[in-house]
Image 1 (cartoon, rainbow, N blue to C red):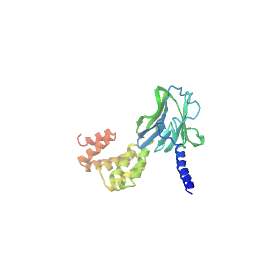
Image 2 (image 1 turned 120 degrees about the vertical axis):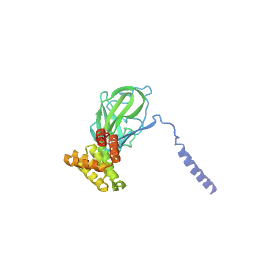
Image 3 (image 1 turned 60 degrees about the vertical axis):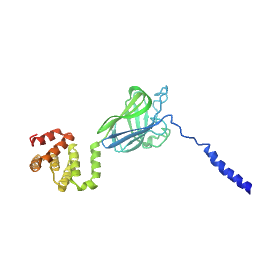
Image 4 (image 1 turned 135 degrees about the horizontal axis):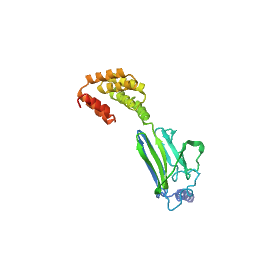
Length: 292
C-alpha cells in the first residue's frame, strides 16, 4: 500500500515537471514590437506592428516577393485602427480595427485593410475579408534598417500614413470629415449636463456656421441657446446663420440690436473668441464699433 502511494506521489510530481520542460522563458524578440499613434481632429489613428531588420538582405523582390500578400511587418498581423470613418486614397473605410497587408510591386503597391486583425501574419489571409483595397505609388527613400510606420503632415482633417523600410517609402493618404465628427460629438455631449446651459448650444451652432454645415440645425441650436439665456454671443451667432441662409435684413436688424444692448466687455470677449477661431475680420469689425 505504501509502495503504491509512493509511486502515485512520484507520478504526480513528475507530470508537472515533464510539462515544464516544454516551456520557454521570455527573451527579446528579433523583430521588436512598436506602436505609432496620431490624433487628427477628434479621430484617433494607430498602427501596431513588429519591426524586422534588413540585416544585409535584399528585401523587395526577394525576402518580400513582388505580387504576393505581405503582412507589412513581422510576426502577427500589423494592425491599423481608426476611431472614426476615414477616406483612404479616395475610398471610405469605416471606423474599426483592421489587419494591414500589402502587395508590393516595383511601380505600385496594393494596400489592404482586412476585417481579420488577429491572424498570424498573412498566412491565413482571405480576400473575402477585405474591407478596402487601394493602390498607391512607392517612392525611393534613405535606408531604414528597421521597418517603421509614421503619420506625416498631420492636420485637422488628415494625415499621410507612411511605411518605410530599406530604401522604399509607401505613402497612404488619409482624410477625415472632422467637422462632421465634431458636430456628432457635440450632439452627444449635449445629451448631458451642457444641455441645460446656453454656452454649449451656442458653441455647436457657431461651429456649424463656421464650417458651413447643417445650417437649419444650427438655427435651432442657437434658438435653444437664446431661450436658455440671451447673450451678445448667441445673438451674433444667430445673425451669422441668418446671413448664411440668405436672410440678410433679419440678420442686420438682430446684429444691430445685439450691439445696442451689449456692454463693452461682452463685445471684446466675443471679438477675442472670433480672433482665436480664425476670423480676424469679424473681430476687427466688432472692435471698430467700440472705436478700436
